[in-house]
Length: 423
Image (tube, rainbow, N blue to C red; front, side, top):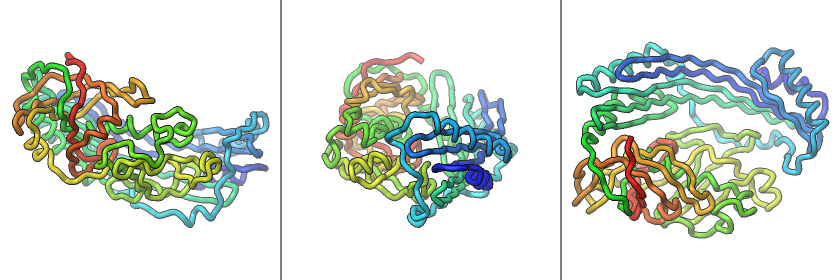
């Protein structure tokens, strides 16, 4: 982007790093089978960081006129001159880093070209079909794209384009509700009618739920539920936090922390969840295993902490991909004598991030399994679990699919529910 060049040429002295981007997206929302809102958003931004040794200052602006960009650079330089030295500040990466970039395909022209009319028609068709079932459909569908460019005074230049499309649907009927979501960088992979049909199917099955006593149950978490919970186990993988004792992974690098059937990696070129070949400072991304067969194989090293610990910097993972063995949810159900099928969680929060324990609730379809069959719906439940305990109790895994991350359905034993809920 030309804005990056304008900012770099405006800098007078010191190290300079510039990021600039442009985003465009549309979102159409619906409630009770009626489209209620259509929003189109287009934005541009620029961020510049100027540094004199370890002293640095940053300024961001959405005004990309040449005068505004030059003004942002001047202001960043002024801040850098008067701020205190930052011992963790690192100089810009040079041009040699660019040779490490492995391109990925994460933009699809059809996604960026999607129109409000196209999205509205898809949602209207979905609403008509769900309406025939005497259900109410709510949700949203969005599509858009972005371009992100970075450059610095050491000669590094990089640019990446990406697109994303997503639909989530909630179907309501009486005291039953169901939910489904689809997301991809390619809008051809996202189908409002298919998501609505799945949400409606769950809502019908979820009618007239019965109370269930709290306790420990074998559970089958669909991918969306598994992803929501796994985030609370994977967020604390920062090496600095672990080394300083602020993470449950303190002293765990290279050790077995999770079950042998739990492996998670990242790869920005994976077609299910592609991302840019570089991180925010231009550091090249590369495929990484974070957990392999239960062993913590890598932690996230910033450039500063990697230098201090004589490690290779990793940057933050662009995605998380949890491996699975391809067992179907139906097969998991058939293998379960007594348990619960979970559609998704919501309002998940840490209880204690150092253990780490989390709490939250099920939502939009919770079903009792008895003797290998769905016995019927039960009222939503609140859980309190140790996430490492959960990941040591996996009995079966499904085929990974994209939810909040790329993750399979999981069958887990001894999942602790503390109470029922009323909503």
